[in-house]
Image (cartoon, rainbow, N blue to C red; front, top):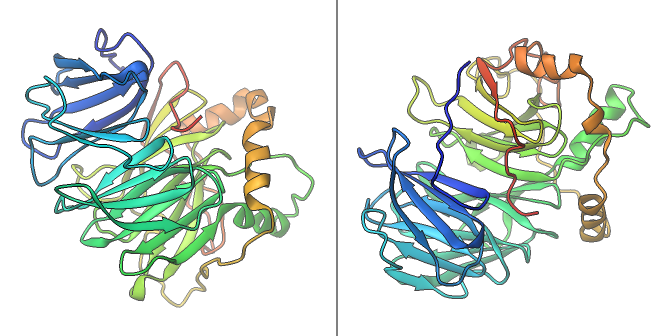
Length: 365
């Protein structure tokens, strides 16, 4: 597949991209040293701004309720910009994060802003004004990504370098459920008799929720995108995974403008970008309810923070030695990993894929 590069918008490496909800179809990108650029759909630069702080811009999200509001994070601050006139911040939410912010998310009404940071905390700010309404403390390492559930403005999902995915209700300060990706991987390896093999730890880099509000995807360092389905009572109903990349999977985003809500775009450290149709994936489909389903994982391991930090600092290098055959399997698509919660592997790869050249950025480094 042919791809096109948008150039001249930044002088430093791009760290984040956000798309507007409005008919204008604007996009905003943020890069190192405080650069923010707004583009149209054709890739033309409409405006650029360098934030006075000079801190790296780590996340950019448009308000779904107000097309004239763009939220960007840099350091511990969130700046509110007008994307139609980048002349400086409309408002500054100082101290929105306890430490450097990695991810922002807005609910559908634009009344709540979730802020995930290096301290392992998710803060929920009320808008306008930025008052802290909730502080969620259960992650034991950097929170790399956060997303609200569509149709459920009081539910959000977080994922972090502690290898945990959590579903939250804003009525409470503890998660509704927690899925430990490391335990999932260990159980799967034991089931498949793969004990002793060396794999990258499933550090969670990015989480996304389909527009139906019930299907979650999490890109992880083990090269897989972990899938979860939320059932009645917000319980974890099913979970599984697809082998999406030959190295760490850094990005996963459901696309809401295609015929059904289960199209997923992914990017990875292997430099590949892929588009997946998950509509027939066993985790997504609701048929065959008699099949056994996966239960939520609530177990905790001692010293999780120390272990996750050690793994993050000394990631195995064997992923770089992946063979050409493994790369072709990801690009051409031949299998989906069988994981707990499914009884068969879905033989379906990406509908399209292309090389990005460099690895796709994964958020906190």
